[in-house]
Length: 147
Image (cartoon, rainbow, N blue to C red; front, side):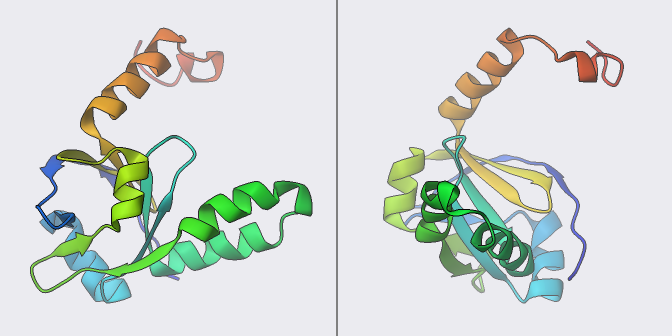
């Protein structure tokens, strides 16, 4: 499986059909390594996660092996998963039910977070980030990052 390291990202605009343009800095690597094959699914944080297909396949295999007590989580992730593809215009069509669930209407934070992407409604992301900051920097990170 290819190794990915996606970081940061822009605020983009959904078009009228619910498509979002994959930033050029990632599009080329996604086209050359996974032929634009992606999976989008719900994220417990209230956003959507966009996975390169091999990353999703690994995640799904891990979910399937979880004990039955995690059936609700397995259902949330696998049940919401939708295969998508980067089109010729570098866009991904996000299913309407997933857009509605994540509150994606216009401005979307397209954020690389390691081997996948998070797609956040801009206002929802800013609120979540404010809560994270208000909770204080965890002790484990205090010596790792500038406060």
